[in-house]
Length: 144
Image 1 (cartoon, rainbow, N blue to C red):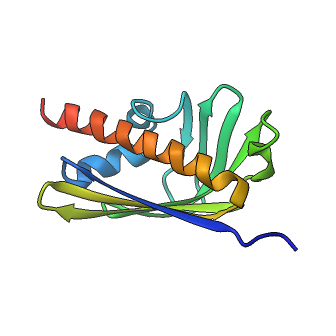
Image 2 (cartoon, rainbow, N blue to C red):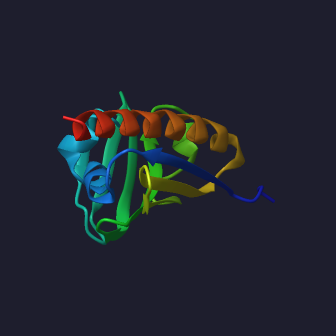
């Protein structure tokens, strides 16, 4: 019997309004500033979510929900030469990102459900890194 899937949850405050943050979650040109090296994003339910996160490591899924400027959800898995990553097949986990107004800007909550135990920690670490990147990029542009 395989272990129960793991859920990770992260929050970060971004010093920009939800509309600004939301754009960085669905626009390929804006996403390129904080996450991945190539992007195919069809930000509508059933649309393609495909991000080459690093060379030969491609996150693949479909958008489940796109509710501007409050929520984006998509399935997630890997097409990868990395044997460990490739155990998480495309569409086999779900990423939900919720945005709420906050006195300092936007509270972003990311929940990644359905991760195998052996991949939960690396996903947590990488999401923390990329959310920090998102906050830095959005805040830099927002203050211009």
